[in-house]
Every structure is written in structure tokens, then in C-alpha cells.
Image 1 (tube, one colour):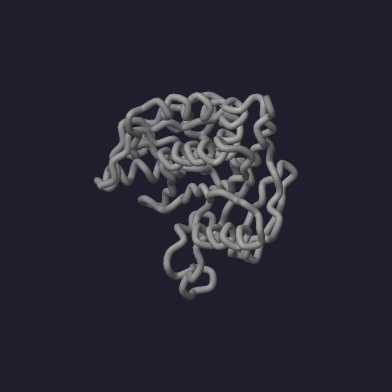
Image 2 (cartoon, rainbow, N blue to C red; image 1 turned 90 degrees about the vertical axis):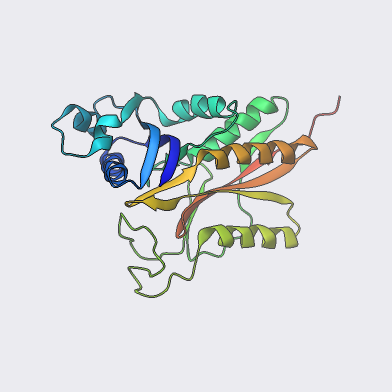
Length: 254
């Protein structure tokens, strides 16, 4: 039995509705429990909202889900600010495959609020990470993957890869750590990495823990307290990832 406080599903469309249904099956099977299930979407008439209001299909979580009508970045700004004041947190986040790097955006905004008199910016990765597929988006996010093929959309990244039919010998978190280690050896003082590892929890639903995001915020604070710093932030699964470097400028002279 996995026990959570609040589970936050990013998006109430085709992916979010699938995750809600699967969580319902997990609850019914006794694999998962939670206090609240929040689905965040800017559309009040998203698919999850329609399914909650529509005929009951036997999936209990469809009735339990609460749709929060909000832009994702606005929601997480308030959500993490509240979570950071809690004594303990047992929440988890179900990301969408198509979402921007929302966790990095929150950490970026927090750094700007923390150091209003210092330059806080997104900086490029200097050397290429050791992953075979890479793409740098216009907003500076560096997307990486060990897959050079199209993966099944609901793949839970098992030990045997469903595409190669051989052992999955790769995993993104140690790959990112190796990259940071190599960058340090090259002379770049790169802190972290702060990694949010989305892993399969139950019935095809991947999550990472809210506590990991709050820990990353503390890491950023510690790194920037003494002066200029760079922190690698990554939201990853075993096979795919989104990476950013958060740059914090030096303190201004008094």
C-alpha cells in the first residue's frame, strides 16, 4: 500500500484522464491511498471534468478527483509555497509528457524572489550530456533521451525494454550525475544535480515526490548563499529527461 497526502495530476486531457482512471483502479485494488486527488487544467470543461460529471464507469477515483482550473505555473507557485511551510509533506505529482519544465520554472521564480538584487538566469549546458538523443528548446530547456525510437506512450520503463526486447541497461538519474561530475572535472562549478525522478508507482502511473522539489529549493538556496552559483535541475524518468542550468549571479558590492 502506498499512502499519499495529495496527488497532483498535471493536465485534465487525454493523459490526465487516463492517469485518473488508473489511480481509481489502484485505489480499488488496495495499492494506493491518498487524501486528495487534484487535477490541474486551465479548461473547466476538460476531459476529467466531463468524466466526473458523466456516467460512473466503476472507477472510484473519477468521482474523487477535484479539478483545479488554473494555469499550471500559477497553481504550482501557490502549491509549493504552501507545501514549503508544512512540517511534513507526503504529496506526489503526476507529470504530463507534454508539459514544460514546470519544476524548474518554480525554482527559477523562487530564486528571483530570494535574490532580487542579483542576476538569476537560465544558462546553457556547455558540454553535451551522454545521451543519444538531444534537443535544446527556445526557452533553454535541454531535452535528452536514451531512446532514438518512438516509445509506447504508456511505457512504465520495465527492466526489459519493450522496443529493444533486451535489458534496459540505462537510467537517466545516474547519467545526469555522471554528466555533472564530468563538467566539474572540466572546471565548471556545477552544483547538484537536483533530480525529480518520475517512477512507476502503480497501474501505469508515474510520479515524483513533492518533497524532492522542496529539497531542490533548499539546495539552490545553499548554493547561492555564498555567491555566484550554477545548479543543474532535471525532471527525468529512466529513459527521458528535461534539464536546465539555473544561474545565480554574484552578490552586488555594498
